[in-house]
Length: 341
Picture 1 (cartoon, rainbow, N blue to C red):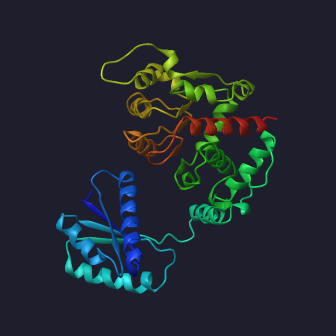
Picture 2 (picture 1 turned 120 degrees about the vertical axis):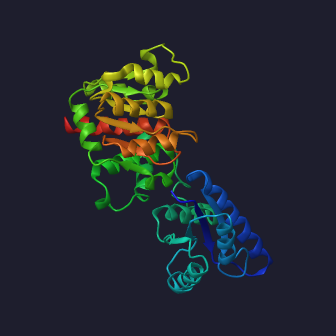
Picture 3 (picture 1 turned 180 degrees about the horizontal axis):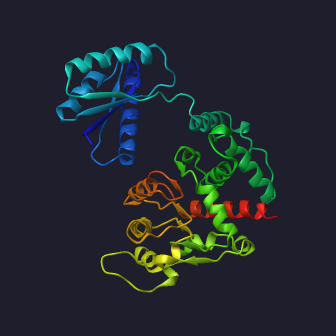
């Protein structure tokens, strides 16, 4: 992969206050984006007008660092003249100046579903009495969940983009996390839902990486569907040198994982060990709910999962966690139970 630089390009602002806020915003964006990308990517901000560094200055700095590719990300809402005319003209000049550098333009922020929540938050900050929950009295758990699901529904993409079952899983993940930004990060393999529901219908076992995931899965639904529920680390006390307990426990299960639903909500090493079993031992789980969380090996393990020809539901990047794996499995159990009456 060529060495890459990122330029987050905003419009810029006149005046002393605007100059300060532009610099602070670009710094926050650059620092916030960098940990979410491949290590070694250089990220910087730039302004189209009024402020420094300019686009030309940012590109010169990155080119001086030896980057071979520069992705220009416009921090703009709509494709106005700056996007359709001014920035492309600047890029053409930069291509002539740096013939050895590839330039790529990203899309504008546009009407991304996640911005809807941000707009609503700004309204509530300005006028708290407009919050839909401002005048709610204590309600039943069912009322609270129904209201929560109505709110979550507003963050989801149009129905044709995902199936009804996938939509239900996504809604419960967002509900469990309280984070609508996960909408764009949840990934399903083509056969994930059908394979998971088929395994449940057969009464296949469900294995988890840690006790927290097992504790959250609804035992009544598990029993109703005729499945069994086990935590990998409860299955063995054997420790292996230079590895984690979660990875050792997953290897210990071995062939028992074939045909099973495997829910990983904590340990990236458990998912990496499972991928090794798939590659080297021919293990074929019916479904992997791969949602380990963290900044070390979590993203890499999920990237590896998405490259395998195996049914999976996962969350791209560093986010995840036991609650989200639990929400996914419980939703599948509920759907399977309702299908069987």
